[in-house]
Length: 57
Image (cartoon, rainbow, N blue to C red; front, side, top):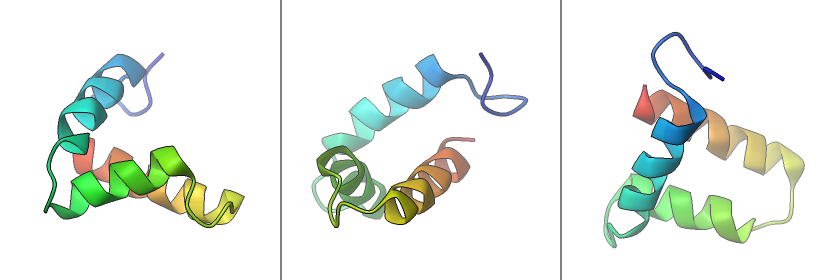
């Protein structure tokens, strides 16, 4: 199922897996925060996901 016209869930997941290993990059920190659900807030998670999708697209 496509998330955007050029990005599907599998592609996003693969990119997030690769980014999670980037220790000092903003997107690596963002992936780790998303996965740990830091702040336990649905609004923060939605914002993080939107940023990750924008980065991956």
